[in-house]
Image 1 (cartoon, one colour):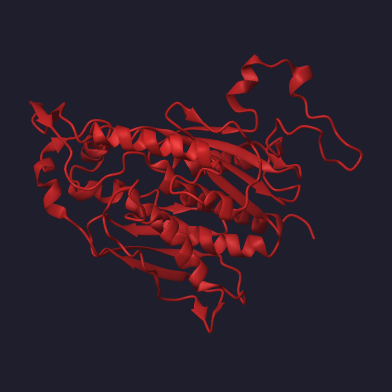
Image 2 (image 1 turned 120 degrees about the horizontal axis):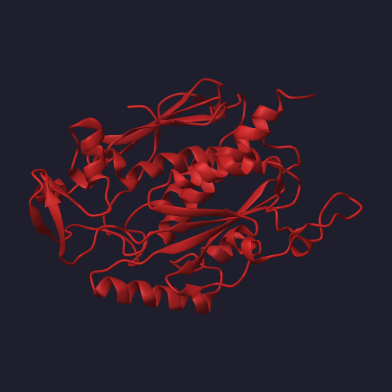
Length: 355
């Protein structure tokens, strides 16, 4: 099966299924002789793991990463970093009723059409459990970028109709001050209330995540097909449940005049506004990179829905097991990780362009 690797120089390849023995990955292109904080990597995984609060799925996984190669005496060796994350709390019997059924808006039908055979336990390879591997790679990438003073601020800015009307950089402790990961305590409480009320109805709700990256040097990105924002878009749209990506002014652009939208230069090359989201012509301009990602409501509902089975017969399905009513609180570190991988990959690519 192709499509399991991401990146050109800093490359992550993942493997494993939701209810297999483990998930894991291989990270290639990691610069050598860099001291890694392994505890920080584990802390990033804990921001994504299930069961971390009463807002999210109660599947109990420690998500303890085990490194197999590429790190010696606390430093990278330059060889591929191999790792696994054991699956500890599978309830595969929760999915027996799906053996011949296709859940609405899941990958069941499409995987069956493509491969002729699928792992129906928790969605198998299509499960969002795979994203834990991305968080490992992203945590490593962020440590390299932090040494270059490149910093991330990623937070939930919308759940359903409850929106946080702000676009600014927040420190991690502010974002982590509540379970929903919105920097505004009042808005966060409203978001949490909406998630709880939605879950009580057996339903789910969508949301959005804002990511702001400060310290990105100008010159990252390639002309034409490998534009920086195009790669960020691909990275975000590869995350489970993502349905939209916008950079800078995004879809608000359609109602603006050019005289409003143009980012006028200051004498030092910075701009008075940042409608471009830190990227012009596909290349970073030194301003903060700012984008937003939209997530659909989780497809598994704890209420009855009509669907079809493998023979095309109409059936009635209701979700079983442990599932999120809203995915965005746990998706924050995933978005941040994918963004870090893109930025580091382009930084390393730039090293081959000029001295």
